[in-house]
Image (cartoon, rainbow over all chains, first blue to last red; front, side, top):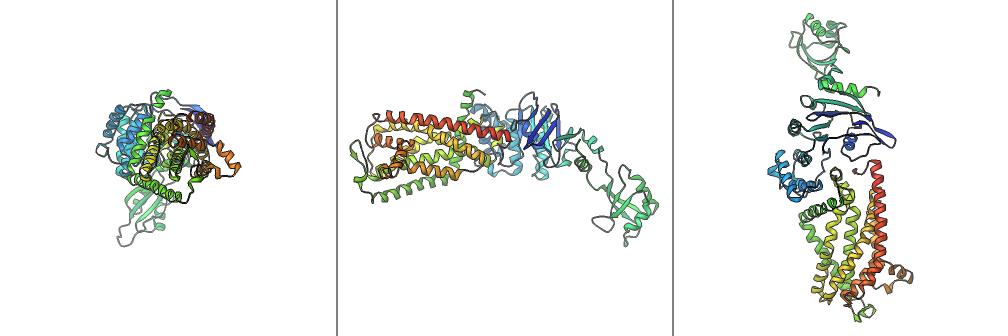
Length: 299
Length: 273
């Protein structure tokens, strides 16, 4: 896609988006609420016309929409898929055969004749993927597919999408669950205020905003008397700042400052006779990058 | 996709809507019960009506139930079809299924027509069933030879209804409301239709309006065919009267619906609740 522009009431929802997705690639699209993710998906799906720009797709496009109520709840999953298959131009017999295949692909064969209203959220999402598979799409647009699923349901959907990518389908995956793109997405783009602010690998994204605040557990050799933040600060000197942590006791938040490594702070604590029992970034690395990019001024 | 390809999708909508309809078993039963109650009310009202004030059809003086049955039946069809055509797209918006439909290579016009197709197909069946059941229960005397001419007349009337329905659909799509206005419009159409009472009881100026009301023309034609036994004799003039009204209503309806669609597409709000 090149230079996609879409305005709503003169407010730009997409302000010149350039993006490419290769076959077999899972391309995650991150961005805060109102960033333009869903508008981009709707433009790519042909649901909204762009004001400017162009989209080129080699093959057909499938859509897994974000809403829950995208099926007819009174009729079965199979009947729903047969209906949508026929709208894609398949004859009744072909639509039925394709629907059964797609249901099998997403593990819903046993629930094929059950009314969709009786499906769980996770099953409805899988049915949504099955619907997108009816036409064997070369590009699959997946809009916030896991936002209301439990971790197991979300894992199943990601596994399903991973399989599709393995078969050569290009995937555009929008999400706000930033941590889920780790070990899943091949490429990630960050969009905010209708502009793509970043495109690269997940590790490149993380490198954009290294952690500088850590939640640490520190002991001082006296199990009954936990260390105090003021005393720890004396040991740390100017290497890092420390404040009491969210759980109190031996829990603290250590701030090394922008771009500084954690090592000197750990060494200073050791010299002061303190033991570092546990350490983790206060926020996940991807979340850190997400927030940093969200705060960046528009280009 | 070609027009033939689009037309081939209509049976998919009919199948979908039929399956959804039969999933509401209590709804189907309740609808029949409602109609029966409706007919019963009119049978009692009929006891108050002086048969001498009712018009003659083919030289035959009718009973009030014979007179009202055709009116009730056609009114039922008008209400059902108008609601179905007017709210087809809005219903998909409300259900949340419209974007999924639009994501397929299907024209909005096909979605609109397909969603009303079952209602159109069921019109002759509903009319025949309703009139037959009432004829048996109340011992009404209808001419079997009037059935086919009646079907032709109803077919000439359907485009008028569809056009009005599309006009309402355009308004509902634009304002996201309008079912109330549609109900009021249907009631007004019914008031000057002679469905429940002879047009002769209306004030002269309302009678003038009624004479150009397609619903009144159709009801009168059905009575001539089914009660008066005129068969094909009077249908021709009724169809000639209905045809221009149907064509104009359809043209205006299609134009209004297209304008509303274009506006929604421009604003990017077509799929939105």
